[in-house]
Image 1 (cartoon, rainbow, N blue to C red):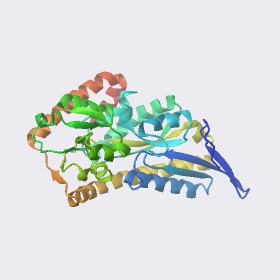
Image 2 (cartoon, one colour):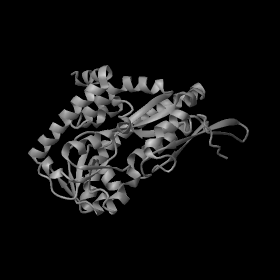
Image 3 (spheres, rainbow, N blue to C red):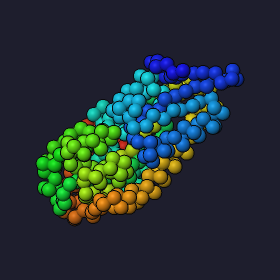
Image 4 (cartoon, rainbow, N blue to C red):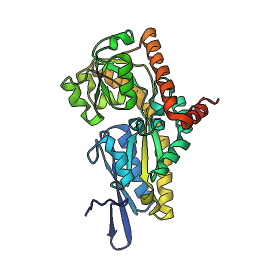
Length: 322
């Protein structure tokens, strides 16, 4: 039996009277077949096995328990003990969350890993102040532009109905003259099918999951940035576990991070092929389009650094160190 309580540990039951089993709900925003969700399920399985069944984590995919933008608050308040969120979605709360949404700051897997390492100490501090703990992060594949027409420069993007899912993607729309429409991942297929949006920036993964190829025929492989999903846990829920179970969670998280990054890189090429097989044209962006988008990135980085203050300077300095 499950009880919805405003407590970190959502439910506990006795298995054969031998030991108390703690159950955690883990809300996630992406489909069950997405590599992030599959990695989450493997993490949950590892935790249950390593804890000898003392901790069971139930993954709720595709925003079925909480919407994407509600998950952080759910974990913070204890409505869910643990959750997955896209860090860049929370840039308005604190600019540090949006460091990996700045176009062309980190546009390869090695650079994204370096940025994640630079961002982590500040993220740890931010989350701790809100009663949460960062368990691990995994990057999405590099971001490109989905559009219903060919693009040669940013000028061609004016007037596009642009899906915005984070402050950074909304800012891009503003800078290129597109019309931003806020659409979360679970709502994207319908928004595309009904023409609410006809363009957006995301990875091959999102394009495949949302069947974007049914509505849009072009994807420009700009490799603009690699945003990260983060798995966060309510600190009180974590502290309530015994030491061996805490160790099992941390070990499973470290394994999931390593596995997740490798999966992301491996799936990047798979998604491109899958989209091509579905009739989408994977386009190499023109020199002019890349130059224009890098200019957008330069403006956004300067704007972000002003907002992020000393913490932002610390992240960028750590990232740019050789």
